[in-house]
Image (tube, rainbow, N blue to C red):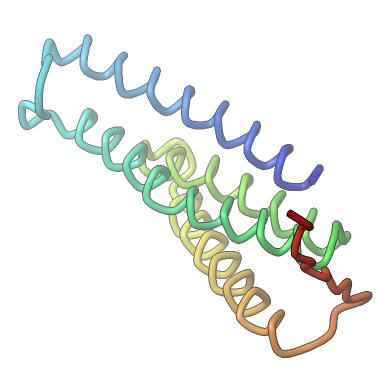
Length: 140
């Protein structure tokens, strides 16, 4: 499952990056718990939380699709676009590149809905070779 492994590794790195950014904002605002009303800290906390809210669903969809029908170029593309969107979103939240937030959200939603659509159709359509597993009872 190379697509899922690569995407999960990228997501782990992004999650670490977002946690470090949030920690730096906490230190700068001298806030240990909560947000202290600091707008920069709130923005970074929300960017991190948003990542954690969507990434598991996309990773689960990637793994089940890859298990069900194999590795395809379009799955690599979906994973790459998701990762790009998840990098752009916090940059937009920090106003580093304002369009990044909207583009990140749009990519995330498109990939999430697209993968969900593919996953929903797999049980009903043949996407390649179907293997049947025969279950036999073991002799006593």
